[in-house]
Image 1 (tube, rainbow, N blue to C red):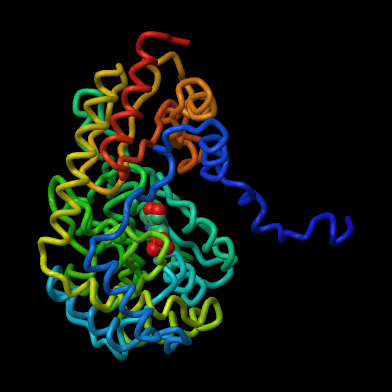
Image 2: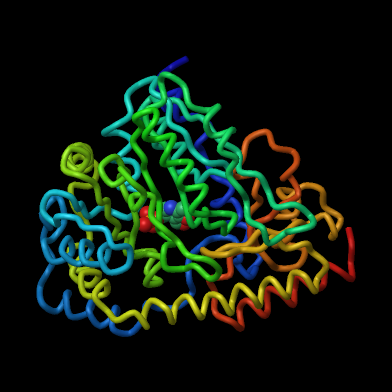
Length: 398
Ligand SMILES: Cc1ncc(COP(=O)(O)O)c(C=O)c1O
């Protein structure tokens, strides 16, 4: 085969057009209410926006230092201390990235070699799978157990024995996403303690994705790095996108002890080097805002979650409780679909709503085939319209 016919390397095949892009295209085509993609349809809080304007007016337009501007690294370190009691040195232990996505890719590329194994929780956010593939490493999935019908709000739970069984001699790292996309599960202290024990016992690097750390509605989020002996083997990743309704800014970060930070910076400098200088200034300010800026966002999103959960329940779907994030999962079989993907392909044209099937996050798990993820990070009238359209489904089964 000529190079021009098959330019994509083998390990990246299968990452072509994602279901997310497909669903967004359908949403646009049918002018659907987009409950598919996880981005808000309103501006960041006013003081955050004002800080961005001020940074542009102040002339912050050139390259930032590779690890990020010092003010932002200091604010991130303060944030970790203020909310989680974790102490990091802004100079040697904090790295600013182009969103959490770049921090994740830089970390995996820096620490995982060809044929090393990387354990992830399933359902799995697709960027982990892609970064592992780019590193030439091997992904191993630990399936989370879905809630039972008797307790649909119980969250998707980690079975420590299943986790232990996934670890082998080539396991190098474990990626932990909590609060979890797409299920809205927040891992419990017991689950995190089990993960920490596995990391210590097998000398693994923990890589955490905590981008929804401030969007928790039930229970509490605790970073894995706060568990005994975990701080020094963990790369804690987060970003400003979800916390401040600024997903397009792509200002993220990684906090880790000096050797891991040095590793992450080595790869990160050749991915983007640095990005978004004025937005780095804005986020440096945003992170120092009082607690009520953070809590207001969580309160608003909790109300939105409740609105969508009630609407879906009223429309006949079985809703799985979501304790956090922008998302909740519902079973669409009551609407005559035993396949969430088929529902998501039909829904934009049929009722004017877009959503994402959970099958996009799993492999070979027919037992979750009828589940669909709905995003509730939209303005209330938009959600109300989406829910009203979904209600039409209970009257017109397929
Ligand atoms: C679990 C998870 N991690 C990372 C990201 C992306 O973060 P960022 O935009 O900061 O790269 C998302 C966005 O949807 C996400 O859901």
